[in-house]
Image (cartoon, rainbow, N blue to C red; front, side, top):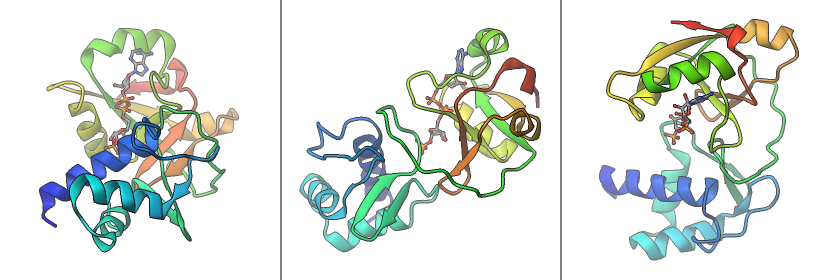
Amino acid sequence: IDGSTRRQVSTFLSGALRHFPDDAGLALDEAGWTALDSVVDRAGETYGIDREAVIGVIQTDPKGRFEVDGERVRAAYGHSIAVDLDADNTPVPDTLYHGTSPDALESIREEGLKPMSRQHVHLSDSVGDAHDVGSRHAADPVILQVDAAAMQTAGHTITKRGRAVYTTDHVPPAYLTAA
Ligand code: HQG
């Protein structure tokens, strides 16, 4: 399948596994898992692609958006629906970044970073990735620096998800500076 179809399938699977499993005809368990077979069927019906192609999209996603465990698959991050993802002890860099719209800055300075419509706040481990994330919201994104080391010392949990995303429940304003 071509790159454009790959991106469409990845977007469909991200939507189905993070936001609208019911609409996609999928049943997720409390940790966000569903049968790989059902995902292969749904994506196959929608895009006319075979099992190998669907599994290829899942396993080679550039951001590691999907986790496969035996015959199960789930989204690694990004959920709006409530899921209880497992703990993960992968080390976290001392400094993380968050790219956002200039319009959100005033509110973020007052309330910190909140999950908004998702279950978690999503952070990046590089300015470049944060810029890409912020570009989804504004043409001139702002990059905030997050003192992840101080957050963890203070007892906040930060978890690596996917290839280069870090999630946490809330980033209070004290841990944020302009990057
Ligand atoms: C902002 C994509 C006002 C926040 C990306 C962001 C990421 C506030 C927006 C992942 C706020 C939420 C997640 C506050 C936060 N006041 N605005 N107090 N706190 N915000 O899309 O981080 O490609 O839900 O700054 O690459 O942009 O789909 O979060 O601008 O990794 O795999 O509220 O989704 O990954 O926007 O993106 P989002 P996000 P995928």
